[in-house]
Image (cartoon, rainbow, N blue to C red; front, side, top):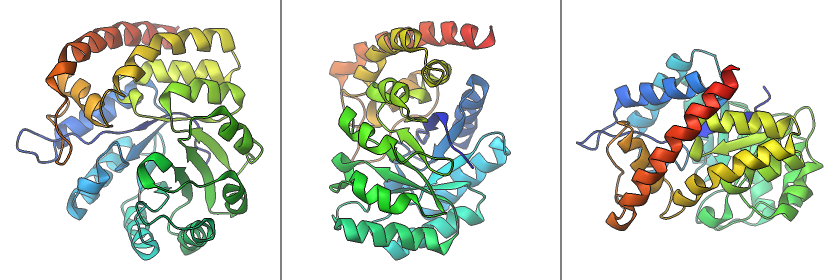
Length: 301
């Protein structure tokens, strides 16, 4: 299975009581599919995976698999700070029907590069699901460097990398690893267009929760090598990306989703968007409406 294009790292909607809002979850999934999103990620960091109970993880994934019904791939975050627990969570996801495990570098424990190789090979060797590597050192405290990715890329069950390091030199060092069985995805919205124009296969995006049609259009343009048109659209999307960075993810994107009627907040220690940013949220929502209207028209043309 080759994962490419516009992929959304889905936020997890909660109701006013702080419980899963499955109706809102289905509406979020429907909006993504209707706008042309090409794959979805369940229970990633944007989905507040660390705050989910096992039964909630199961419910979210089962509902997504049933709703999507094979129309797009369903990736699921299964990475833990321990290899055995990661394998257990990946088996759980496989039993619930996921297509690919998105496995972040083990948070907090900061293994060596040799430890990362051993970790990922063990998860992939177990064979429960194909593995997508995920490098986000700003959150985990460990960097999966290109030389280590190269050691892992030849494994038949390791199908790609989500790279959240934004420097162009990092993407350049990784592009040579792309082949028919290994994809390279941006994990950084502000630099995703640049990465795709350089040769990356797509983006796993936070912003596409609220800009699904616009990100599908951006991916179409960038992957087709239409640099001027992609750059122009990317520049118009930049204010939304900037707003999504005013507080830690997923606080801003969940504030926007709440304004759209999808979900009602976060789980502590995450707290609601600060009052000082509320006016910017409303302005950003208005911009999103304009961008999505235009992008839907372009995609339908």
